Amino acid sequence: MPLFRPPSEAFSLILQVTLGCSHNACTFCGMYKMKKFRVREWPEIEKDINEAAAFPEGVERIFLADGNALALETEMLENLLGRLYQSFPDLKRVTSYAGPRDLLGKSLEELKRIRESGLKLLYLGVESGSASILEEVNKGVSPDEMVEAGRRAKEAGFELSVTVLTGLGGKDKSLENAVDTAAVLNSMQPDYVGALTLTPTPNTALYSKMKKGEFQLLDPLENLQELKWLVERLDMSESCLFRCNHASNYLPLRGTLPQDRDKLAGLLADVVENPNRYRLKPESMRGL
Image 1 (cartoon, rainbow, N blue to C red):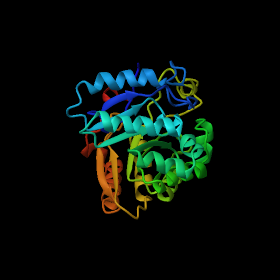
Image 2: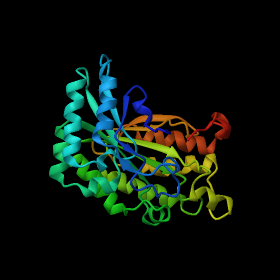
Image 3: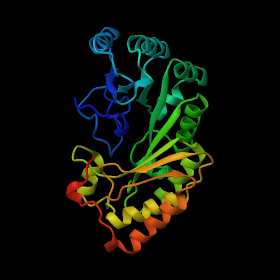
Image 4: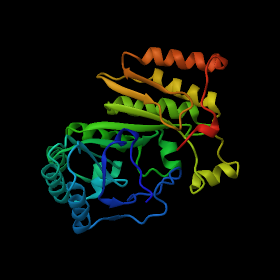
């Protein structure tokens, strides 16, 4: 502990195959600061599988934790996935987080082998499409590398779910964050997009920067304005589920792109212009 998972994996069996995050240097993220990264040994993983397999009925989804299960060697992942589908007869899909450097570190052939073994969906933290913002937050990759990572995941056959962070550029780079992030998403063409709102946590470098007055957070309406700039620039050629209903968001939104883009952008424009018509989530109710 602590253990993290995407909201959509709330009813999945969580199998911890790594501890922490191999990058663990992003200035905004405090999820794994208390953990030293390592890949768990096979006997540890096998013990967990055996315990869970004693009650296999109803296990239809498994999420591989922690931060980036793709850090495992390809052969180990193939063996693990084979064991999971053997041990849980009702299993329909296995998913995991994917760091961009993990995707770039494996060949397309390796990624296809992993996909064919049963890892079906990857969650990729894009955060921002701005080169300067990605550098400032120490994401470890450029926008072009992020796009290449996403494209390779798609080419290998994975479903791809990406997250982005409104407010990550602060007040100075709000428009830049929206415009450049939309460009990266358009190049990547993910199956799912989740837009979260930046919420600095005390154990992060970004939080310290904010406390020193070196980073200015957006207020709720500025965040929604940035989200509008982002949404109105999204150009998805195939169906993409868009969600803005995370605990961190001020206003829950959902739709399917491209058909709902103009409706979502119009709603956001009205909220920004007429905020008294809407009930935005108060700061005390927002989560991470």
